[in-house]
View 1 (spheres, rainbow, N blue to C red):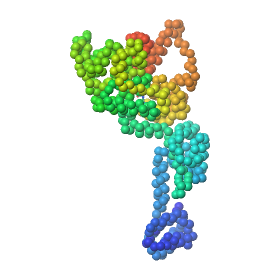
View 2 (view 1 turned 90 degrees about the vertical axis):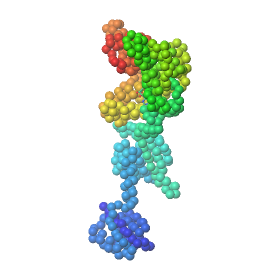
View 3 (view 1 turned 120 degrees about the horizontal axis):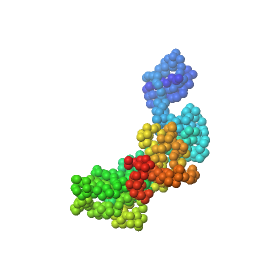
Length: 519
Ligand SMILES: Nc1ncnc2c1ncn2[C@@H]1O[C@H](COP(=O)(O)OP(=O)(O)OP(=O)(O)O)[C@@H](O)[C@H]1O
């Protein structure tokens, strides 16, 4: 406990000397002294009331002393308290170290991730905190400025990555007086980077990734969105073609008009034409009244034609008329109607090969390919995996009613070692499965359910179950269809891939009691 006095005085030379003298006459130790014009604040040890009265009397006897008041804190103590409260409330770890490398400040954030109380580390050597990580320890002990170095702190259950920076504290004559280390959680830093990168571009808010490849794709998209030209998005399945199509629409001048997404593979062959172009009354049995097609419905807006490579050749010819002349003709009508739609198409098929095999019209290809944009596969931008994982965890926590807050380093390493043939869609599914499987709040390597040949070795040879060849073939057939259905592709697309009809797949699904996402 301390006694703190604030003494107001007249402006007189030697006043401080005289007041301080009264403390020494009573043999009192001055702990702190603040001198201002006409004001003096003194901190001393607590003393008995009689002694305190004596001290005050003696000070009042000095000519020019106006008042003496007991106060709670000296000015520098108030500032120090404010500073510590600020440092403690920061979402960044702060460690201040003196010139002898001893810790002087260790904020609340640091207590949390080092799992040590500040009382245990204040005054001890900073090197002790980074004992398990010799590389960062060496850099820190140089005491020289550095920015954003990634390192790991392994505290048993929690092994996470952080980003550290260091600033030396310079004295008035540039002599070094220690340094301050600031530490951020790596994953939080990435989240923030995403917020900042996406803040101007609301259109990109659902497109996660800060890799150079994604950044340059976003740049191209921004340029392309300004014009009204047809765009062809190319890239493997699950790379995000549809969300890029949405971004183009959101950045375009048609953003206040409609956006209609049509999956060409999901429309059965016999319905595609009527769905897209509409039909006249009586044009076929059952056409009791006429109907507008989807393209007409989308007039003035943007149409996203996903999986354009799946369109039958006859429809390709009609689509070419839309692109060339802006005209559609309903089934059963001899009249063409003008429409104004912007087409964004997408495919994961090799259209050039399809042209070669007479499966895709060359003229339509050239018309679509005015602005091709290639969406890179995830394996070429693995640096985006961490931010995608964070993003999906946050989204899926709400959906699955979970509270996953951490990912083990090994979990991320394993994801990084995989090649992701199903791209971001596959990553999302793997995260969802891992979250369902995880017992606590942490995602661990053991929660990953994918086969990673490079990491876990080759798969065992698969021998289908069954009493005889017929049963074995049926098991195999069931497994193949089941696996295809898991990719969430349309039945039409699966049928194409397996070289059978749409009806065959539906019949087999009934036979084996399988359900698709279309059911
Ligand atoms: N960069 C990304 N950020 C966040 N989510 C993404 C990203 N890329 C893809 N996704 C998600 O992955 C899933 C698949 O994306 P999308 O449907 O756009 O892929 P696609 O390329 O159109 O696939 P397909 O060719 O099979 O139709 C969606 O859930 C989408 O939201």
